[in-house]
Image (tube, rainbow, N blue to C red; front, side, top):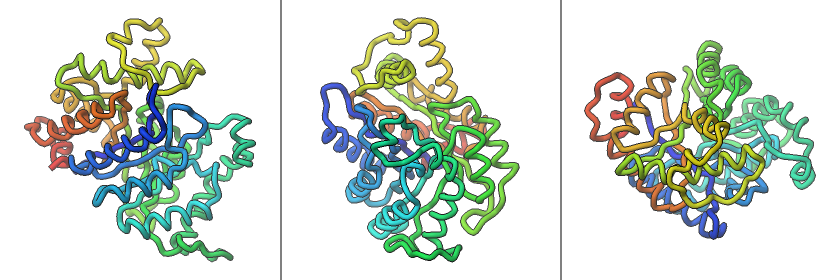
Length: 343
């Protein structure tokens, strides 16, 4: 079985507010729970007008309180921005509030310029170099598998599910060494996908948490009643990607018909590159693409990203995707695994 999950950035749309973005994410999590998705993850970003998930653990507390069964977690917490002790306390608290439902995905890339480094009072280059040691310390603060001079309360004895997140060979190697599940961010960095997954599986060392490799892969998914509808709702995120790569991040813009055709060659090449880990189209087209992606990667889970300007469009996209997987008559092992996960 391949569970399907949701990755959300708490997008702030043009003309919208942070409060509206948070409300839309809560509603999205509730819709994902109703549809049968396993996890709802929020990613940590800072100092970006178009993303409101910076206080990740606070956002997760709100989402957890508004749902009943779906797992809630970070996709991820950028550990160089924090101390392991603080994160142990925060996610120990979340685990006490929502026992058996909390995931703690950890990333290394701080993604911060000098201004944000000063605001965080951190040397993020040095902190990123300490990432492996900090992961070990954080795990020990939760599990007690090392003799540390301080105990996190809450934190010690809690049971959040720990993951390593990555988009390179570094994260794959660390996850394998520590015997942790690994989530690959193919939705925005597909270059090293196949190599990283192969390395993780080859080097995996069993741990108290996990006895065999376990992989989740992220992909962008936009599903509509027609191909044209799906491409239209996908164009808001496409504009954001292009703007970000050009050094002009902003709030999520309204959709633009035939947006790709308005771009110069380098912009189209960027979207084609990201399209390696994307499914855009009708329910049948989306499930066919997802099945091929699962067959390629051998993923144990898939987490779907994809911000839309109209929050209702993303809810509809998630619903159509899951319904199509439930109804699909399987014709390949990958498709069968997807359909089984949806049931």
